[in-house]
Image: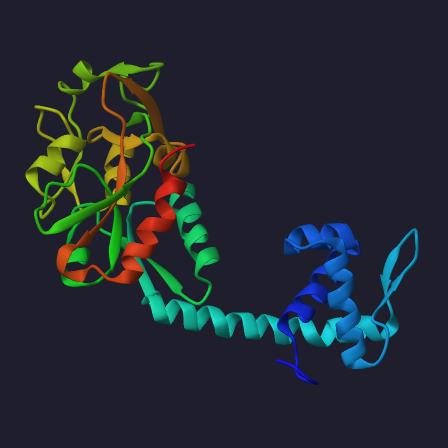
Amino acid sequence: MGGNGLEIRELECFLVLAEELHFGRAGARLYVSQSRVSQLLAALERRIGARLVERTSRRVALTTLGERFLAELRPSYGELASVVERARSAARGVAGTLRVGFQGTADARLMRAVEAFQERHPVCATELVEVPLSDPFGAVRTGGVDAAIVLLPVAEPDLVLGPVFSGERQTVAVSVRHAFAERDSLTAAELTRTPLIAAAAPAPAYWRTAHAPSDVPAPAVRTLQEGLTLVAADRGAMLLCRPTAEYHGRKDVVFVPVDGLPDSVLGMVWHRDGETELVREFARVVGPVVAGP
């Protein structure tokens, strides 16, 4: 705007300078020269009709008016920035509430992914919804969630597999009374002769076998907590990835590392017919966050 109207760049310059109290650093943050910072500040002070900043050879400080102007400007500018971001998100179809399902534990990796998405799209709301261990894909199919972070493998033709989390070593949960409780590690071959608690239906048979690779009959459970309760009662053992094991540590259960098994891997899935720009943007943002250390 010209004349007596507001110039957004002048206000941005003042806000950054008020934080840095250094013309050089303010210029670096704004990608302009130090002299340009001086020009923008001078233009704003002429518009207001008074000095906002006192500068000497040794220090930069806000005047009393500058302090008051900063206190009133900061929330107003923040709201203006939010208005612009809401419009940008709406134009791209990235707006509204994203419901993300998770199995068992919303661990640190998932929370980092959600935080990265919220930082990029502060106008969006993210809801975390637990999905049953025994039904990893049901909520995605029924629309209960927009996407879910579930244990792989996923071989469902109606589902899309998005970002894959970095793999984690597997451990087996056993009762403190179990013969394996004092072991430093186990082999994959030993597990095939051990009753392993598995997820109940409707989890697909291939998925249940992947997470309980044993030929010995054992109970089937609907939730992770049910499984750990049966483990504590010495009704069987249960495979869990290392972060989940650490999160669910308890005095009556021991977690023993397993050698020779593929890493436990999480992946983001969504239904082909439910793919929205909001889901695609979540996948784009979180992919780099979860793919490595």
